[in-house]
Length: 199
Image 1 (cartoon, rainbow, N blue to C red):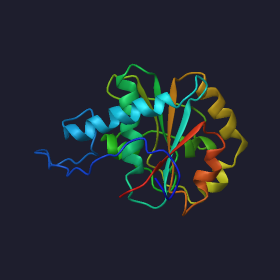
Image 2: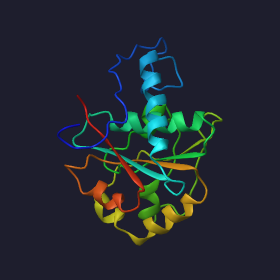
Image 3: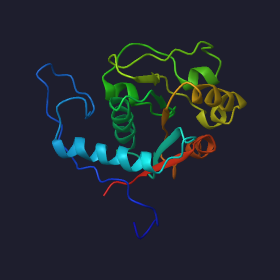
Image 4: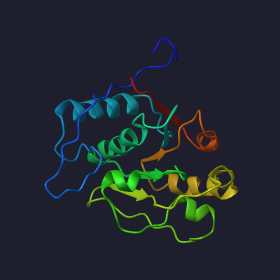
């Protein structure tokens, strides 16, 4: 807090993931059985974050300094927490280099996301709902080689403006800010940025 001069929204405890009988491994999610301190930390994060938002603040970008700081897990669980409160939430995987949102949620079905839309490989926007909740997804598994160029496309602004009117919150998971320019390209479309730092 002293180094970055920013308010700490929450501290999320490190939790060891238990092996499942089925052998399938998903990310740690507040909707599944997890450590109570882990769940409570996201209730606190949601409460503090929403208190800082104005009525027009809808697009919240999540980033970090380097990989493996828990940025995607924090973004996914914040989206789940907001949706559990009855908010209509869109979770967008904007990390076109290493998409991870679907794997964290345990989703294996094919879907087109932001990269496909910006590269014109998919003109249709489909936003599937996650487990009959009020959380919707815009994510794929495709890795793109030149994502920074795609993210500077004019279509991104029109897309964000169109999505803004249909959701209470849009949670955007991005690549680490200190290693790629992708987060900077996306930042101009965000109302707030949450910076994730591992201890």
